[in-house]
Image 1 (cartoon, rainbow over the protein chains, first blue to last red):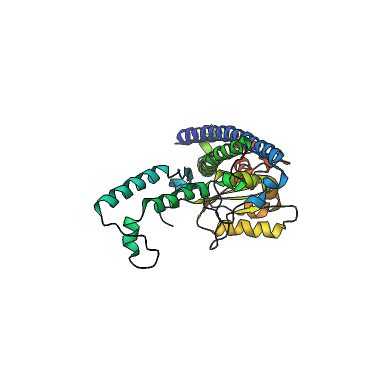
Image 2: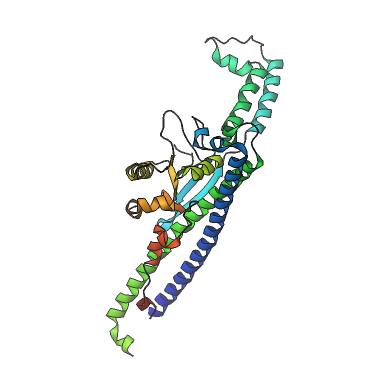
Length: 206
Length: 119
């Protein structure tokens, strides 16, 4: 019984050390990616101007492009997974195809911007109106556009570095949660072992 | 919101926030408060602490990224946070490199060992 407990404790200790090592590695990578990102931002600021790359350029309305899926496992460990919204260029193409189809088969109505028959208009509106609405949303969402239409390559490099940082952050958050859970288990196991030793002092003396 | 993932909040200096916002984590609209705070030289500790606590209270934030030097200012608030969600991740800043000995999570993990445990 005691040997089992010790073996279990040893396994947990090894797991703990492995997790710490993995965390150290990911941290190191995260820190170097962040520094790379800052350096790229500084280079972009040098070429564009001090005020051109600052908090003054933030949009007044922003929509997040990356979300994190959270789940709580047994033992209270939380897992985090990054999910990024992809560009909806494929949907754009589908919309134009559907519009052409509707034109041929359905009734053709003149575009009426007043309130009447709003639902019918949505099905049979002019293809041009619909396609104009769609391209603005993917562009509007890209934060790179806040800094101008033609931005230097450095700013794009900064963006890709920080995108990687975000994915890595989710992994580190999961690992941190796992480490704390392992720590709790180990503590519980050590306390259990101490209790066993106290109740069986004769075996220990031998 | 069911079926929708959680947000990543950022409390950091201007360059840190700019970088993460470029990455696409920012949310700002008329109805809701932003999920980031740009900490400048004149930002008060009270404001930082209140923002941090408001992020903890929000159910739609999964991870909070905070520069370590800012985390030092509100260390008591971070140490008091025991829940697994939202996760708090300390990141370096340009003037202050990452120091593992100051990280709340690692201090909790380190504090358990003593020489007697390995006898």
